[in-house]
Length: 607
Image (cartoon, rainbow, N blue to C red; front, side, top):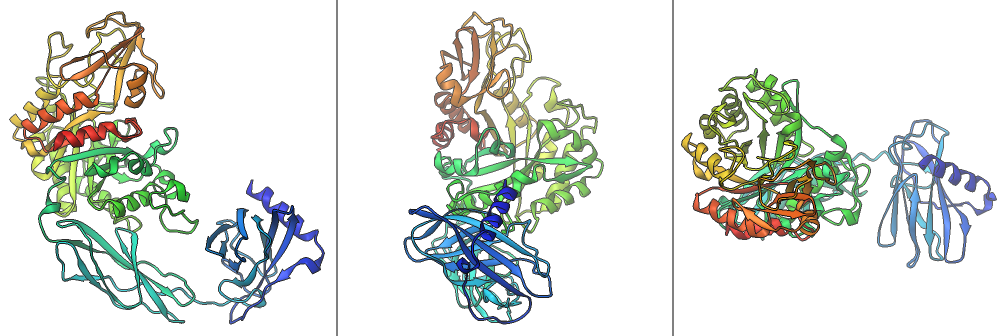
């Protein structure tokens, strides 16, 4: 599509008389010569088509180009192609795309746009210099400032100081970034950030801007924790309210980080697990790089309301999470590795835990997104037991892996694990040393859901997330209470256990009996997978008709579903508090209603 636009723009420009081309000049200064000329390619009264042609008239290759111009008030670009066009008021800037920035001597490239209003461009600049065929400046970007140092730290403020950057044309000012988002622009080399939350962790970097308005690389980061004990507790009640955000949700589910804001969920959670990183060749690795850090967001799609640019160093979910943390500084984000699909790699990782841990820290602390993540979560399904594949690493493997992670990440990072909720005698909780591993971990996400489902094609129908046992339960120990009790008996402190909540239901079809225990003919239809459906759909398509073992079930037509509602979640949170648990977690955000009612139920229930 872009190549068709490029060709059309070139043809339109070439078909005009030479006299209609307007070259807008300024002063020239050095290096590679180049020109930028504008042509109005069409005019329909209320709008017009325009084209800029950039030509390298020098003897050296031009590596990139940026054309800037001013429009009179009331004239603007409405759409553009073959360049990234932005504006600040009436000042417009067009930057090359990734494929058309390099121009050999004598080569040229055009980009086009549609505009509205009667005006013509003026004050043209090409790479900060002249557009008239003079030379393009070889102005280098400024150097990185020194890593900031923190002083005068209080409950709500911190003073930052850094050594100056250097630049051949001089430094204009510095941008101060907190957790990756700009919080101030200053002319000196100190800044005091106020209005912070007490007992809270922040990360600061600095970036210089020269007199040509070029920005240089970001400095090293300094981590700061404000004084006071407010931030030592995960939430207002001291309880964790953690949700999983799925990397792939940005595709078919069309669920993005901004949805956490628009739903109201961001103000109610304490932690996010970003799922999932992969485990390959015994090492942690990013799975989907496009969704993670390459996908571009428009202004209306982004948390900050600012559009991504083609040349910014970080885009995708990671940048959106950075923006979320700037808006909600209390939220901590952990990178979760494994999951049902990617747990097969843990067996090899367990053969060299230290090397595995080192690889994980390298991913979490990648300089492009080091400020985004506050820890790591391991979702191994299941150590020394069977999940999608069967593991035979031995009972000590999980403890050894946990110890290596804590040793590598140290005390300043969160290190957690999602674990089985199988409380049966001799079941998965008995297959690994969860009691011994707990000393190295901040908490366990106990997956107290998916106990029963339509993989048992003919039933019996049973709730997939029972809080307690009940008469007729298909398998002993398959409930939250038994799993929590078993973990406590193994020596895991109550405060290190989070109760799991599913934001979805599991269901059967061919069911005639309303109460649990009925027979079925197969899995009920689901939007993405048979036998499973989001709460936001089920609350309307198959409303709850009863409760059993602390969770809800629904019989509608020939379908039978079980899922949690705000009411049953309230009951589960009361139970969790009475047990002294550290809080709750849920899988996953996109299953909730658009106003985040399940997240709200957890938050209210933990108060």
